[in-house]
Image 1 (cartoon, rainbow, N blue to C red):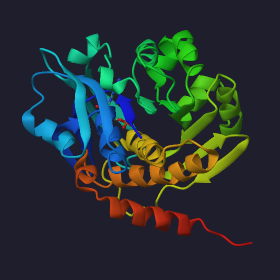
Image 2: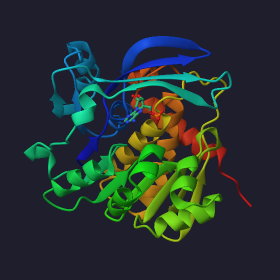
Image 3: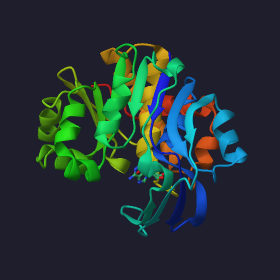
Image 4: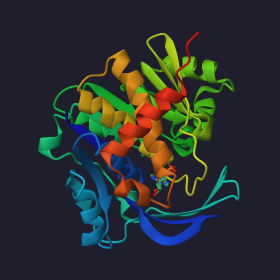
Length: 302
Ligand code: AMP
């Protein structure tokens, strides 16, 4: 079933102990789309400048990513630069140049307005809501990502938007900040009271937790010997999660639990190489094989 994503398409400069790039295709919607398109076609809404080349476009198009909703504006694309610490556990943002993204107003092509699954990437919560207002009918599932910037600066707008969505995918630090709690369970319960019926808290190498329908599921991160670049892990997790749900066509408790495994698997592939290098080359059979392995890793008989 149809899957829509709204978010940043960017160029990133990334520095990790394993390598460095001055300019590579990135952005939350890019990572999300490359991950989700392994399961189902993706409709992308975002904005790029005139520096977004034919080759950049080809990376997305060659993966069933529909770009009818990717607006082109005069000027430069969103540019982000970040540097990781030696252990990759912390990251410093060196530069955020919004460029054409500063005036971004998501506009859904008519053909996108019936999408069944919607992912609202990390943008202004008022703009996230404007996407929902453009939908012709209520999607089967709307998921949302946000970050500390919006939690701090637009808390009321964020709460209004949270009240309209089904699932929040967020990392542990943001969950603590949003809820005012410093314990995972209490944070998740507080967020569930804000509206979403499903909360996914991502904890990087420590895995992720699903809170849904009165139950909890803990999924580990796939163990890797070498992590090269954590950029976009959360967005790739979201892409695997939403892609798996959209491909199933329903958002039952069982399909949401299954989607957690694919989220974890796509997050693990994303971090194996710098930028989107690994996701670009990733094959569906590799995804399925790692998903089976992850399930085997966690299977215990008592
Ligand atoms: P993550 O590692 O999940 O935080 O995602 C990193 C991606 O998000 C990079 O490719 C950036 O281009 C993009 N990004 C960084 N800052 C922002 C922002 N303020 N709004 C939207 N996207 C951003």
